[in-house]
Length: 602
Image 1 (cartoon, rainbow, N blue to C red):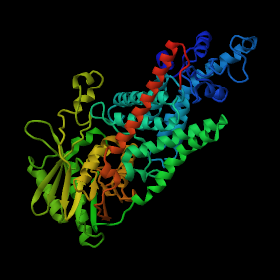
Image 2: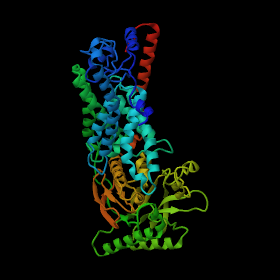
Image 3: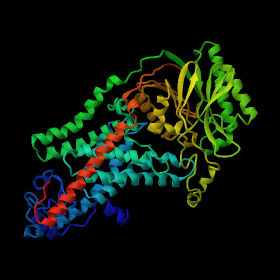
Image 4: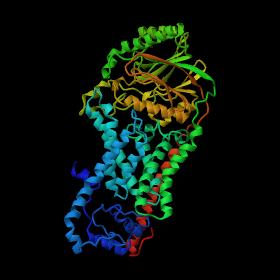
């Protein structure tokens, strides 16, 4: 760890006791942080909130209420006699918080699929809160950055499949820097009364930033996406992923605050408020359970998803484009034979994965014939994932609605194009670090409108792979009339990594958020059929050709999350902004009080 990162992570040098004493004498309520558990009472007396402005624990900072309880003032013989022990404690404190921040990040990673350990997330955030509580802004940034590395390095390791560690390390570091900004914000608002509320809103603000910038954003790793099996899941139907993330963060930060104030023997009011920050999100989740339903409002449909499999994993699967197409066509023909034999019910419609035909059927007659024969064999509408190659301009990642009689009738172009995967920003610069940049020889271009295919009387909305991570992409599809959501995907590039399970958890969250069945056809797995309550009724194994056929409910009712759209997120952003405004106001008052030589009102 470099010295700059170490300082940022909270290893500030001890503050001169003379300066601290001067601040206390002036009554500036400088809120110097004292060691947790040994000076909580003194800090509360000094500031009214039990917080301090940033002196590191164990540095002997003096508050306006005097020296630490039961400890002689700085400079006394007793301190001189205990100097070696005090120095040892200071050195231990310098490294404890950075280590705990990394461990908190690793604990949050462990809460994500494929592990069913969703309940670890609040504890991970409670540990993070212990690192950030009462820290300076720069310490909050450094600790948040270390937390982000501990979290995202293992979570995103699948991005190194086939291309080496450079893209993985670059992406994880960039996202960790943004989480560092979140840590900075949490450290600032942690000095406010009822700080878990402000801190949880700041967490959502950090997720909102990561979902939008840079290069169009990367929402992967939202707290909400780790809660597919969790107690808080019904909140997705109420306020979408922002509210779900907020609830988990509030519970975690509230858990730390409850333990902290209990240790300091607070007033009953403070204890009740701290407990409320834990109980409120749990109670809200239980109250939201009636919003989760899988009842068939518009009847049912029998849907089929095809997993044709790929010849081999990794980026080189694209060299076998015709084999991939043939695999999906053959598995569809086999499904038709199973239907004729009575082994499975006849589907009303079929969905193929993304990139199931990387050969443009509009320009390649042989690809057209293969697809057309397979669709005619099954005798129902089929959504085909293809790559269209226009004579000029960008490529198109397109879903094609193929009718057994009319042929191709409608298309949907993927709107959220993955940076550094389907398009290459800063190509010449990135090439300096990795020659794999040239694997993307021609960029894909985004579509403009949501796609809802009319398939045998059902409105099937297309949300292609990466788009499932974006709130607006899924919501706009449902608002456009989707009774069912299809998430055709291609995860063959990432082998047998945890990526496909992380994405499947997103799809389950979206099912509950919008109360829709979700169909997930994937070239190599895991394909699945998900009911509107988030339960998986069928799924395939990885790298196995298969077909899933299931009766699913059709629904048209919009959940509050669908109707409200980004409004809950905007409200939480406003709360975060109000917290920052309060912090700024308090600092201005302190500075004015210092200039006037009078005590500042907290």
